[in-house]
Length: 376
Length: 76
Image (tube, each protein chain N blue to C red):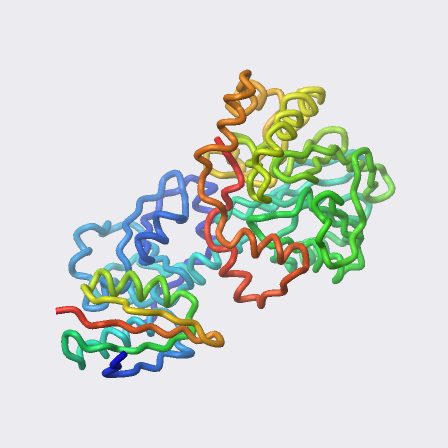
């Protein structure tokens, strides 16, 4: 007896539409506590699959009889076993989440943010399971990609579908929570790979240094990408103003939190950089700019259409991290009692520098878990 | 260490390493040690949690060329 699968794409739609779903997560309690599929109207039960090997009788009373149940595990093997057992117990709407949390971590949902001047378009790629956001700016048959994930096929195929050529690839900083696909995309497409030089001191490959004030044009109709040096999360962190309307903040400013300065090991040194960027450099920008960050941490940061975007002026009113007048209090908030660091963040940084080249499977393992780049 | 039984679970994906481990544990006595070899990345966390919940003792783990080795002492 084979049970039906539910794809991570289908789950994503349920999250974005605020639908109900009962998730039976059969990973260990630690794994579940650390990171799970989040949905506004989702309900949960966590029982490790190895406690169910002798039967599911003990949990049937805790499961809904008539609504959909999705069983999820790390990779999709154990969830299938448990789903089959439930099916045999008479549960009719049982699904196994295909590919498990690994597939969930890797799913990218491209969502159009807006049209740009002269027929250009801006897309946000929401990596919903891990909270990573990347971008494609399209204009006149050319595309630029910002903060791409390692699922490079998704961007390359998307560009192909739009009939555009990827000409420029950017990373706002050297990432510590996920492996960048920037270098691979540049190699595949012949695009230029831009990195802020202060973050790229140790990289082992060719890149083009991106400096404050640099201006890169996508297509021939001037969709400008203006680099704005904005250190704090890392020494080199750089923001982009796109089409005079959008502010891509990388890991410096999020919707409901701000970047943490410790992942490259220099929290104390970079606190004042972070403050200067947030409280002076960003303050000088137009309140009308729409902030597009590189991450979200909680589902509440998603807009109704699934995008993560908010006016800079609104963030200056509502984001707690932008409203701490006292410098010492700010220092304390971003250096003390920080959340745990992302899984394997040192190895991820080394991979992004080109120092180590882990196999695909190992890269997946390194990225397990939430992104944890912020402090609230 | 006195290993009573060795289980080769290499190449097997989750949930099979634990399914086989559980079965193999039935064949040995309390206090006996089972050695498990697995290649599934998830095996470590899962076997650790499984041993704990089943009252067994995970004595030692080792990684050798992509093969994880576990020694579990059967509980009472």
